[in-house]
Length: 488
Image (cartoon, rainbow, N blue to C red; front, side, top):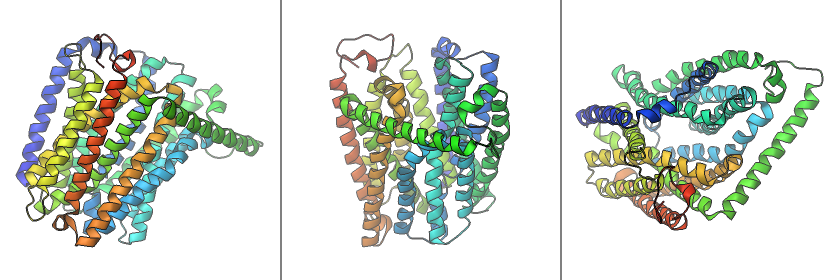
């Protein structure tokens, strides 16, 4: 498995480079039109990406060796499952808080809270105490929720309300962030492997390495972002992101009123999102697909290490392979939806779900008790990540078409609730199987869980087909410039 992992990384890197060159050759005009040349916008975009990419880098560093760290501390697989459940449960509990905090405390302060909470989460990994590690998972859930809301909230507010840039420029920034994100994920696996295995510093090393990145992110948020806000004196009152210490004599009263109105706005957003979810069947079906597909991914995140680690692969390199497969999928999406091929995102969503089903179907056989086939399991995991690369841009496109912009935050909050609950139930079911049979692949719990995931992918496929049927003649679900009666 050691040699296989390195060979897979080389092949996937070559595949990604080839696909990227083909994508740029097929759509050079499209690449040119998405590039914004406004100097003020470019400075603002660079300012945001400096902080945001450091946060993403710190997050990715913690991916390859989390399960390995818990095993290094001699915890049983059933105990580790509970640790993962605690992280997912905290995501459910903190999701409403993460949506409300930027409005109540200020967007920049919330980004600083993320840096502090995630740093504390990394420090807890130094302890072998089970309850300290549970606290770390809770802090990790809070941090993950803040990462997905606070940075985006700060950027969109400054972009639209302060700088008054066109809303059409927003995708240029987040598209650039997404491109960097894939590269950071691949590099994070390599760096984590370097420190944990090549330098023999152990599985805790990547977590300690994430702390300076979080400190750098906090410094950018505190100084550079703060300076950017101070340069817009008229916007200070609107953002509630003035001086982090001190305030006006009546700041307490205005702050209390601001928190109250922010809480009211948040709950109103949630209620309107629920109303949109229940009144539009397209939104409901899309939410069902997202809940089923992404909850299965959380289970995959837990299971890939115990399936492959007994066979001795370098986990950081395997992680980089998985991320490179996801990158290949996202480039394939760009190629497939280019003006030459013009495949529809809904078709690619169906393909992604089918690939995921096939991956889990393979895993039910490659993880048979007493007859593990790690090379087939690695291939299945790579196919699953390829499916993820197709899935996320496809579902993002469809969400943008069926969910109104002003209701999107509230609707997505409701999407995430069943997502995390399904993942928690799956891990708890695995905990019961492992506890009852003696653990791991030998007891068959892992194989049964993969079979359950395949069943969930079948249910997601049915939801996608229902969405096809419902939106057969809906132009909103098609890319512009394509025609065709009776197809999405």
